[in-house]
Image (cartoon, rainbow, N blue to C red; front, side, top):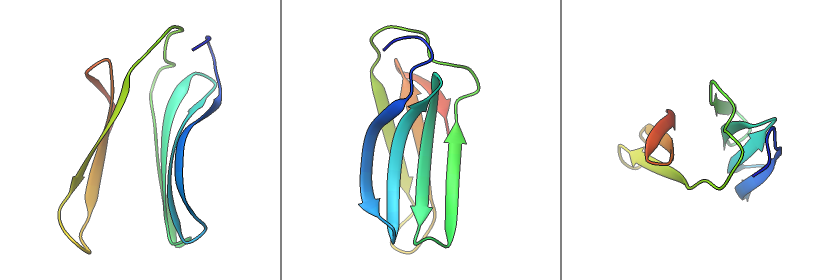
Length: 81
């Protein structure tokens, strides 16, 4: 990944609900769209350095119809929660 990169890494869903993981000017961003009613956005505090990286999304879902927390890790280190 070049320094200050921008682009979509992963996107799933549609207008009714979706999840998108992307890089915006070097920052890792996670967007959850809940049926167009609410959007939750998490963004890394600092840009990701240039180079090859492994990004892991770890969802923690409380159960059907209940809340969830997603943790994003970069090189086994938590970046976003």
